[in-house]
Length: 147
Image (tube, rainbow, N blue to C red; front, side, top):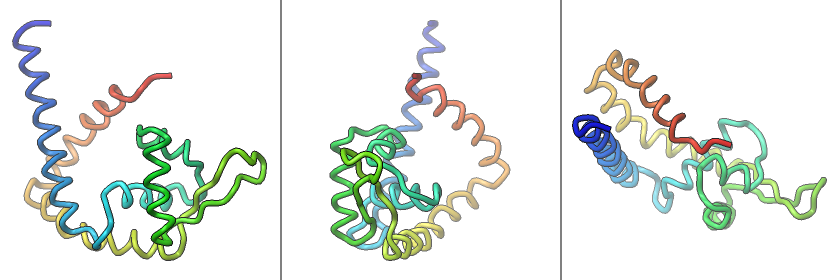
C-alpha cells in the first residue's frame, strides 16, 4: 500500500471515529433520562424487525458478545421495556420482545433525537447525505465479519 493510500485510509477512519464519538455524545444528551444508546438501539431493532429475537441474534446484529447483550437486555427488562421468555422449542434459549412501555420509550427517544438528526442533515443538505450513504453502506458491508 502506498504512503498516500495509507494516509487516506487513516484519515477516513479518523473522521468516521470522530464523527461517531461526537454523534454519541450529542445523542446521549438528548435521549430520555436513564436511556443509553445501546438501549435505544436494541429497542429500535426490535421495532424494526417487528417480532421476537433471541439474545444471540441481537448480539450478532450489534456485533457484541452475548454477555454484553445479556447485560443490556437485563437493564431493559428491569425498566419494563422488554419481555424475555423461554423459547418454547428449545428451553436453553430465550426470546426477547419489546413491551408496550418499551415501544413508548423508543418512540419518545426517536422524538427526542429527531430534531438533532434533522438539524445535521439539514445543515449538510439532503443531496450530500444521499450521496454519502452508499459509500457508508459499502464500508459497513466490507467491515462486517464474513462467514
